[in-house]
Structures are given as structure tokens and as C-alpha cells.
Amino acid sequence: MKFLRPVSLLALGAAAMYLLDPRMGHRRRTMLRDRLKRGFRHGLRESRKYGRDLTYRARGLFHRVGDRIQTARQDVPDSVLEARIRSKIGRYLDHHPHSFKVTVDHGNVLLTGDITDALYQRIQPVIREMPGVCSVKRATQQILTPQKKESA
Image (cartoon, rainbow, N blue to C red; front, side, top):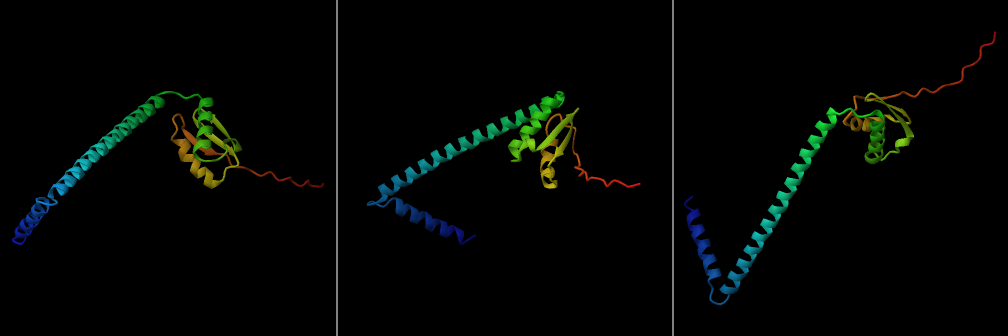
């Protein structure tokens, strides 16, 4: 700690000599002033920008929570829910929504058609979080093979 005081006084003296130089001091002081003003303006601009961003994010969260509460209270018709599920699959999962059939019965979703295990694992959580969905199930595809006729 005893070493810190002389070093800080030395630094302060060097800064004073640098800024109060009769030949270049005025230019250095002006440049320092301009840099400080620019930094202050930039800091204000950035803080306003982050404040707006935070405000918009909070507003969006508020509306999202309000929408979830409102839609949770409403009963969604099965036809509307089916259309929403197809739209969600087409938008977020990059999979053609008509490659399999979506059936909705009182909020219970049944998926039939060409659905791999990996696709089902991706689709299920997305559909399950939608308002109005109670359960999501996949119909197992049974391959029908022709049976041999028994001769009597």
C-alpha cells in the first residue's frame, strides 16, 4: 500500500505534464474532451437501445403469458386445433404436414402415416405445448401380409 501512493502521484504528474504542455497541450485536451463526449453519447445511445429492447421483451412476455391464460380457458374446436397442428408442423419442423394424417378428438391428437421415431420425438413436444391439446399419440403402422390359404 505504501508503494501505491507514490506511483499514483507520479502518474498524476505525468498526466498533468502531458495535458498542460504549452506546445501540444491544447490539442491533446481537445482530443480528450471529444473522445469523452463521444463515449458518453455512445453510452447513452446504447443504454436507450438496451432499455427499449428490455421493454419490448417484457411486453412480449406479458402478452404471451396473457394469451396462454386466455387460450387455456377457452375450448378450441377440433377442426381449428387440427389446422393449427398442421401449420405448426409445416412451419417449425420443415416436414410436409400432409405426409401423415392428423386426427383430433376432444383435444386428443392421433398421428397416422409415415412418421419415423426421430420425427415423432421432435413433433410430440411441439404439439403437446399447444393450447387445447390433451395428449399426443402415434398410430402404429401394421404391414398387412397376404395369408396363405390352407388346403383341406
